[in-house]
Each structure stands twice: as structure tokens, then as C-alpha cells.
Amino acid sequence: MYKSMLGLILQQSAMKLESEKTISSKEHSGREYKFRGDSGTLQARSYLIGSSLYILLGVSGEDKDDSAEISRFLDSFRLTK
View 1 (cartoon, rainbow, N blue to C red):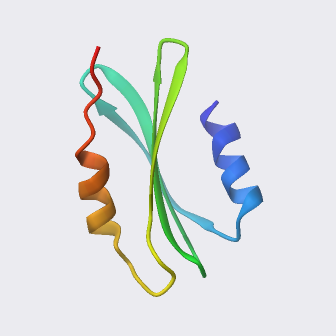
View 2: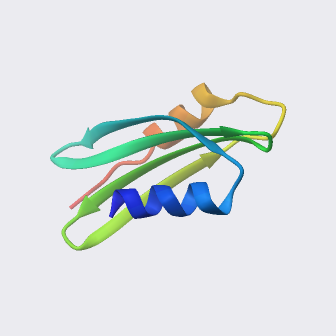
């Protein structure tokens, strides 16, 4: 499921995958992706919980590298039961 999401993002944009890693929030596993392109930076986190896929996205403008700010924004979300 993660690979199809990744493929869709790359196929629909001019962004390149910069990094991909396994993450977790409490007992929920997930993936974090960082993309970079001419139009800016995108960070995505995805969590598979039961049969639902949750995706968090953060985007910055083309002349900015707001990676730290995007990470703080994504860190502000909490998965609850």
C-alpha cells in the first residue's frame, strides 16, 4: 500500500524522493517520506491502522526549505484510539 502511494506522488509531480524511513506513533507503525522538487519540499507520514490508511502532508514553497517547520507541524498530530 505504501509503495502505491509513493508511486502515485512521484508519477503526478516533478518531485524526487529524498528519503524514506520507518516510523511509529505509539503502537502504530508507519512510513515517512521526504520529497524535493522545483516547486518546493513535501513531507508525508502515513500510518496503517486497522483497515484505514492515514496520511499527513506538509508542503513548503519553491524557494524555501521549511523541513524543520514541517516536521514540527507533523509532530503536533497525535493518533488516538
